[in-house]
Amino acid sequence: MKVKLNYVANQVTPEGLDEVQRMILAYKLGQHVAFSGSPGTGKTNLVVALPKIVQRPLFDTTCDTFMTESPLVGAPELSGSNGATVTVWNNGIASAAAEQNGIFYGDEFDLLPGSVQKRLNSLFDDRRSIRRRDGKEIKAGDNFFGVVSYNPSDKASKRELEESVADRFVHFNFN
Image (tube, rainbow, N blue to C red; front, side):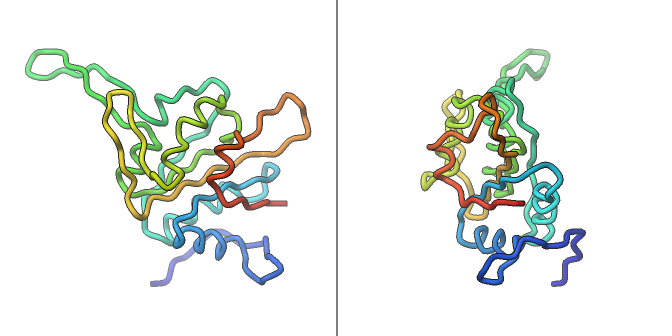
């Protein structure tokens, strides 16, 4: 099957692999990836091209310093049912990606508070699952793939990926 991409690979390794080939290799091996690079280097464009290649849905969000775990893992919501109000749990973006065997993309992931980054550890390691606060465990399918990106900084005030989080990813440097 031929897939038309609107992406031009420009990051070639000494082994002759470009970033598209490396990302697909990581995907096939079940290894999540972290993209590091300045704004405008093509990190997001590469992620947007991936679903077309592997035929999986993309679940993406832009992270920030005020984001809690709820939009990522899940949260309760009030819903009407037969004239009564009931509480139902909705999956967050990462949980939905795992449950639907999709691709999770967290842009600016380093801006998340450390506790929120670490909350997703079990999804990105060998357990490949996450437990919502209502107790339901969401197990990732075999094709679930996690991608995070961040812009490195030399500023002391800039957050970095938590070490335990960073260990769960293969890192690509865009420069």
